[in-house]
Amino acid sequence: MDTTWLSTLLLALIVSCIIYCAWNAMWREHNLPPGPTPLPIVGNVLQMRTGEMVKSLLEFREKYGSIYTIYFGHKPVVVLCGYELVKEALVDHPEEFEARGRLPTLDSFVQEHGVVFSSGKRWKDLRRFTLTTLRNFGMGRKSIEQRIQEESGFLVTAIRSHKGKSIDPRSLLVPCVSNIICSIVFGDRFEYNNESFQKLLSLFAANFRDMSGTWGQLQHMLPNIMNYIPGHHKRINTQMTNLANFILERVKMNQETFDPNSPRDFIDCFLIKQQQEKDNPNFNKENMTMTIMNLFFAGTETVSTTLSYGLLALMRYPEIQARLHKEIDRVIGENRIPNTEDRNKMPYMDAVIHEIQRFGDIVPMNLPHQTARNVNFRGYTIPKGTDVYPLLCSVLRDDNQFATPYKFDPNHFLDNNGCFKKNDAFMPFSAGKRMCLGEGLARMELFIFLTTILQNFTLTSKTKFTDEDIAPRTLGFASAPISYEMSFIPRVGSY
Image (cartoon, one colour):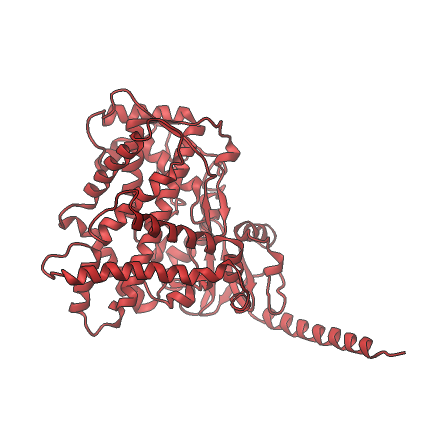
């Protein structure tokens, strides 16, 4: 009897057991937070739901607590859940957790360029410049608020052109919101049906889908394996290259008519900075291109998706919509455009917008952080260079901070007298040094756009939406509402 195959199988089993025991002993030597036992090569990936990374991370929390460690391949990731832990890391220990973590779906293209994906001095230089430019932009031809008000007028006109017919609101919300970034970066806006503009928005949408889909999630967790496997994730770099080429063409156009004494937009401001700091490699072409791309991603997708959530929620709860109509009529009336000063007089609108952002939970995982040095945290030792995931979804739905975390309720942000009430666990823009640099712009856009829409229209749909319909759908690294159609019915007397 030939026993060669049996001997081979037995040898393979013995070798596998030795490898597993050595791996098991190695990962347990570290004083990292507890977590599920990883396998060699794949780590904990096989223990996660396919295409449902956020749900899997929340399920691990139920078993291992609010701080635990998982492995993506051989790389450990420390996961932080709940307001107290996330605040302690990002707010109380900002320097230790300030570095940007790995994003394998983009890292090979980005190569740590741009304000979002860089760390250290490069990140600090780019962030300081970008913040200053955004804050001072009102010193140009138009302030940012005026640009948003102007765009809200174009949005109302576009909505009226459909004469109350049922439409997908994203077809108008996405170009509307993106035009604000276009006006800041390029100095002008696009017509909603402009072919080049639509191509740009389609590239962003396709890239977002591929990054968030199952293939993109696998690329994120097992890059060393997925780099050799065909799939949708292979399209990401091509799409990013096309986006970069579009931006570089606009930079070239600016350079041909550039006047350093009269900056027209973000590109001009960056070109001036390049001249001022010729010896600083952080202000090069690659960082300019990626920073502009960062602004587009953050400024288009998040705000337009939040508005989509908001319109859907207000159709589910018409009593909330009716109360907002009354507040708008009382404070603003029919004949003028809303402005940011109105917000202080409109506590209910303020509370509703906060609740839309909390409930919509647009970026549930946050962007990954990384320890900038060895960190002693909650009795554990987290080595320098370890990826850290502060889950924003666990903060925005922390039942110690919100009475009914899984229910849409503006009362989460109102006191007993109907006045607006702050909540420190409201972190849709993250927290600490890596907090979203476009927070002020996003808040302004959400208020002016939503208030203007409700000033002019009543939101209706042929579909009877349920609580399940408005619950966030997590797609990989982001949440999005269901696809839906609705009608904008003009209010009597609206301008």
